[in-house]
Length: 530
Image 1 (cartoon, rainbow, N blue to C red):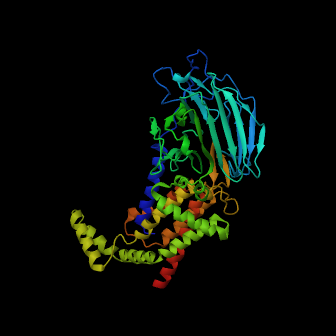
Image 2 (cartoon, rainbow, N blue to C red):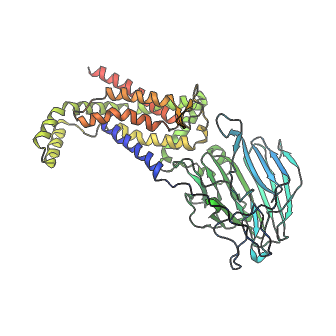
Image 3 (cartoon, helix red, strand yellow):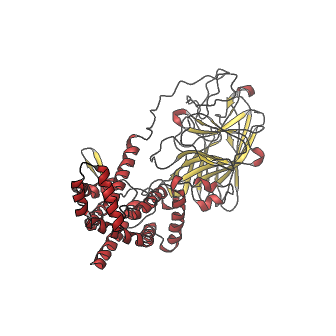
């Protein structure tokens, strides 16, 4: 690796680190919940539903869902289990209060299933229905009656019906159909007497552990897919949309309305910044499919609505997706994504080996020219423009490209960041083990943790080995006569080790193998040249 390129890359990573630490949006301070609001009938609205608006001229609140005083609590939980899902539904509102994915764990070392619905109070279930003031303001935070106490879905679809009335006395039914072998649930809402009513979906908070991974609502109009980074004001969506949902990094919720029940949708910011998808009931009813599952392309394609578009890696999408396809192909043979990352690194180094040789030759020529350059610097120390002209003239006459040593690394930088994005969002790499104690390539290595002066210090082996190989590689690289550059290069392995300390183990493995192969290539080129 050409030393100036190492400096540039190192400074880039440092810049990204500090941008993440100091310039990304901070978590908003939680405000104490306001006092329970009174409805037109003078009754306190119970928990689980947004408040009805105070202004009679406004049919629905466009922004915000104030927290409510809890008056009713669920008296019954109906658990539905399929081979893939464990769903809990509450008789309070007849809504879904928990969705667990049975094939995925919350943590790599734990036994608890992955939970998709976060703590999004004042919402305690979804969907939440309420009527407009013009229809007799009310919400569905009443006790509903289920027609079954529990369901185990095996070979055929099973249906669960919750029947109840809204707080204004209007009848409501929520009908769910569960299927074996799929992450989808059919849902139908019947509220025929409530001509103007809406229902809300809320299941994720605005807290995001990584500023490099998208978390929030998204929508697909049929022509354009859009991720909504921040919900600053209400976003209105035409009724012709294909789907809307929430992205939670590796997992997603998607609402896909049936064609006969398409209606406008508004995405709003609720209490404590919680994103809310607010749908309008069409003629007192709604029907569609809900998807609760992993962001896996092969699974999302089966929905046949273009849902695979939610697997989006931003600027590096064009590199990350073919990379994941290659890793998945290799994994059919190796069954180990750590080995697949090693094979990917080897392939990249083979492809760019001719450029590496050219880079090395360019650096050797530059090294030979250092005495001449030193004399020029002394001669034209007071005339920088003349110095640069003379240097470029010498490089041109000798056929030397000063930037020749940078090309291999410049090409590999997009691969580096694409792999980082893949490790942060590709479900295939979540909790993917490598060997020994490295049990999750998508998160930092977790060997053990020391507590020093009250601070937790994670001990990680891969970054230390990577830093050592970085030092060896530096020693084998042709040196410059610039003393300042030499001093900077002495601390670069330490800087890299520090920066890679919090990177996913898979990314550290990639850079480590890249260093080892570069050392081998450098040794071979040196030996051949001598």
